[in-house]
Amino acid sequence: MAIKKLNDFYFKKLGNWNLIHSFMKGFWRTFFLLVLLLIIGDIVVVGLMDSKYFIPAILLSLLCIPLFYYILIYTRAKKFIRVRYQLRNFTELTMMRRYLLLAYLEKSGFGTRDDLEKLLRFIHSEMAEEKQNNKPLSSLVGVFFAAFLAILGGSFLFLVDNVVERLIAAVLIILLAIILYVIGTFFMRVVHSKSEMNSRKEHQLTKEIIAIQTAMLVSENTSYHPFLAMEKKVSENDFLKEIIASRSFL
Image 1 (cartoon, rainbow, N blue to C red):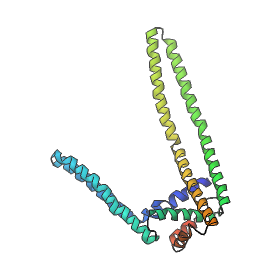
Image 2: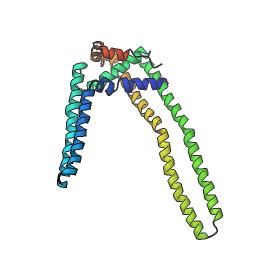
Image 3: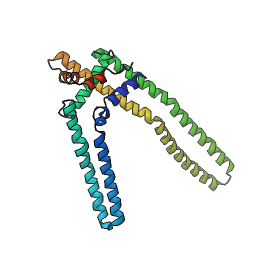
Image 4: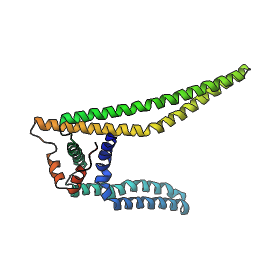
């Protein structure tokens, strides 16, 4: 539960939507409206005009969509972080996000490299436990399919006397096994999709914590302080200070 809360903090409160795009809803609405108008325009071209104009209309739409995105979203987002957070580019945004995570962890009691190392071990143990909990389900599904095919195959072959018919039945059972394998694989992917997503998030979070540890080590051994500029910028922004003051994940 604690790791889930930490994941929510990093991927939601420190995510691009919360930091940038939630303040640009009007531009997103305009972008989607323009895309909708392009689609309607293509439909009109197909219905009312000669078919020779269809491919040029589609190509024009495909060119316009990234252009609209660049003008309405990318450039606006870049301007937004420059005005709101005093950041020159998205690389600095990544550094600011990392500092916000560091400040939040410090507030939660993880203020040193050793503390962060303990947190990493805790995250790894949580990941291992989650993977271990998924193994029985995978084994159960595999045993179920194996038992089902064994019973079904034995029943078919026991009832068939003719050699040719028995061979056909065996081929059908093999095909059924392949179909069931595909269905079972798809089912397990659906079951494990959330777990895999959590694993990817925890892996990304682990990388960020290791990067923070590295920055802290650099700060301890040299005169360079990687987060000094970000600390000043965050201290001047009430919105970012509220993020750091969020409830602890513990």
